[in-house]
Every structure is written in structure tokens, then in C-alpha cells.
Length: 138
Image (tube, rainbow, N blue to C red; front, side, top):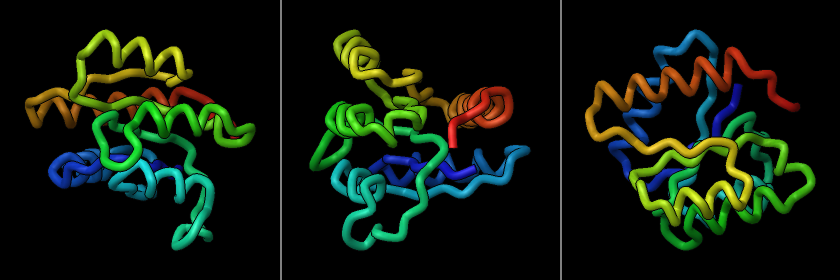
């Protein structure tokens, strides 16, 4: 399984990687630290010309250059990329952000817990549902 984590917070990147190390499924994680990197990775541009299509995308909203909503819109408007599940994993609990994410076809919206143990549990639940229980498109 290959996950693209779009996140600019180094602490959250480390925590997410550590949590996925505990998973039952072997996972490769690629990191994009801003919206431009995420789109370049997904559309195989520049230094990402050889990137592998992810099976799942974890997308923060508050990222530099292009925010998560802008990235989501581009993913879901592409005939190939739109099949990849996108989970908005963010600190925002704004109803506006939640509504906009679902209006643009995110597959799930999860508010990042502030406690480390709760964050790790959340990642394990994502893994259990999206990588074990759900059948994903190739």
C-alpha cells in the first residue's frame, strides 16, 4: 500500500509515520509538504516524474502554496486521480471547511486529535478501515 501524506508540520509527519509502522499492512509513505509538491507528485511533474500513484491520500487543509481544498479540487477533477480516496486530516473543525471538503468529494474528514495517543489511535483506525476493510481501486 502506498500513501501520500500531504502535511507541512514536521511533528505530524513523524507521528503519522510512527503510527503506520505499527500497522498490519506494509505501507510506503510519500511526503508532500505543500500543495504544489502534492500536485507535482500526483501529476508526475519535475522531480516527481517517476512517482508511484498512491492508494490513499491524507491531505491537510492548512498547507502552503495551494491549500488542501485547492489540491482536493484538482485531484477530484482528474479522471484517473479521482478514484484515489482522499482523507482530509486536519486541525480545522470549521463547518465551512468540512462542507467545502465534502462538496469537493473528499472521502472522509477527520479532525486531528491534539493528544499524541489519540492521534496514534486515529491513524490506526484509518489503516484498519481504509487499508484492511475497504477494497481500493488500482
